[in-house]
Image (cartoon, rainbow, N blue to C red; front, side):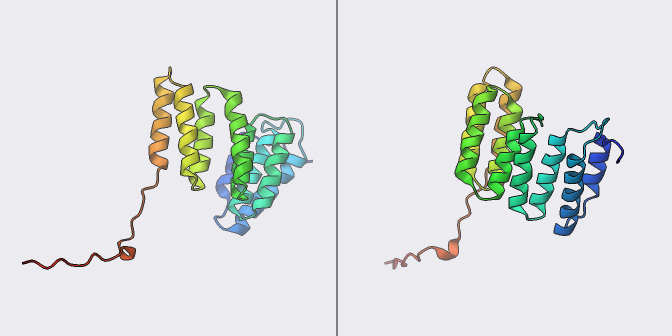
Length: 183
């Protein structure tokens, strides 16, 4: 039997992960094992451990495992802030399942009203996965729903501004304009 897992244990393991696929996979394996063998006294929920394992699997490049672990976390019924379903959305995006991610994100947003943390997390996920239009839609919806909260509105506006990617114009591909002779 292993010792109970604390928040400090989780943080220490996550921070010790080597930044290559092998190291990320090892951390995902450990966190998944901890989640499967919960013991009395664990201060970290199985859902939180599985979410963390999912994120490390994604960093390791194992998209399908990431999605499987995120769905397993959701299946535990544990709440992982801001909403466990946000991590499933993230894993769906890692797998390239944009349509499913948008549908689930909309379900999450509809059930949270003016919870700025949900809008921030989902907007950042879509932005990270180069879905700027979807991220902007989420931030805008959040600004409308949080309109009475100046701090929340400012947070959403700031996140939207940070997430925008400037349009790059490649001048090498422009059609040359013929020179007009001067008379």
